[in-house]
Length: 283
Image (cartoon, rainbow, N blue to C red; front, top):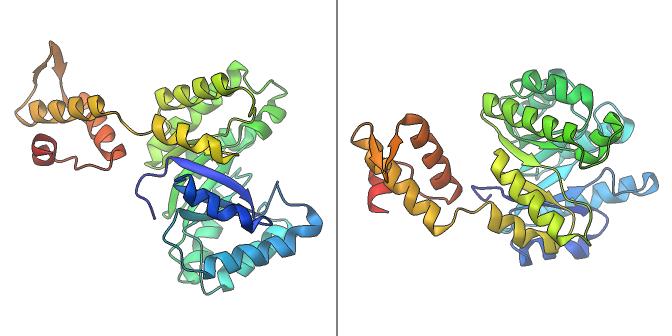
């Protein structure tokens, strides 16, 4: 599984011909969706295809299954099938997370099954946002949290670009930072507004998200580029850590302290590079 999970490409589990596309566009994560993109009459077939895909060896993107909501009949069928499968996904995306209990139970079930699968919480309601600080601390195997902006906007009764969604994004990033898990931004849904998509991706980077969901393969390259530090950012981060290793000092007239060094370490980690002073200094 890739170390840095920048791009998360959603694909209906009923469309296996699209799975190879995720690897061809270098998506870090392929999400086999059993929920929103699959009709109720197709749930069983989607589940079967997803499990067949897991059983096929793959060196490509991290494989994720988005199950149906916890507590629904289809959701329970999804979880039972996954827990009984010989092969399990790298990550399990649980939608509509609104309480710590949901993640605690799923964490326990995966542990009992001996699965190494990590969890991703999809938060997409006002109740979910309010409970995020507790929920994200509930499961030791939680790797990331993803924002579901479309459902959240419907819950708030607001437009998808309204300021209150920015507040929800900020609250989710705060909860993720406290729990030491990755924060993944919601997808951009307007495939005809490339400029809006570019701005949205840049804003996600600025806010502190470490990755973003995609609904189309052509969005992946933009996401990967935005969440990959530039050569200049990497060199600056290395210089910061070299100065910090010698004690508090100045770099280009700016004070370097531990807070600045922490940000530099995040840059190097996002680039897949060593964050030690020696590695930062020597490359």
